[in-house]
Length: 130
Image (cartoon, rainbow, N blue to C red):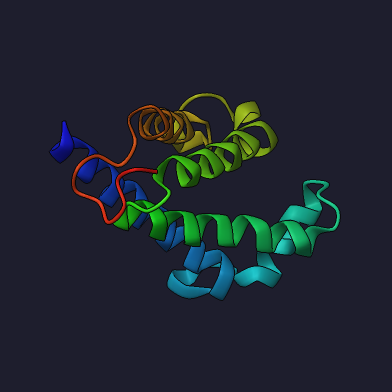
């Protein structure tokens, strides 16, 4: 179980660090916080720049926390909330399958976050009590 939780944390953490770096700093072909803010504005988020920073740093810091196993349950909970909002605002209307922009990837992330919220970081973490 501890090895499985480590693998889950490392994979999910890496994914969210990458997405956070795209949104916060424009790395890896991402939009940066300004471009991301414009996209959020088009979805009706107000103030868009505020929510862009919240989402970008939730992904970046949440991913880092998952990667090392600090505040794992809390980080997973914040990422879960972020993914639920993304699903409802963007992906749900596009159907299930990923190639159409659907929510299947989001559903997998939700399941992974729920597992980490329920089970915690496991033995192989820097701070496995939270």
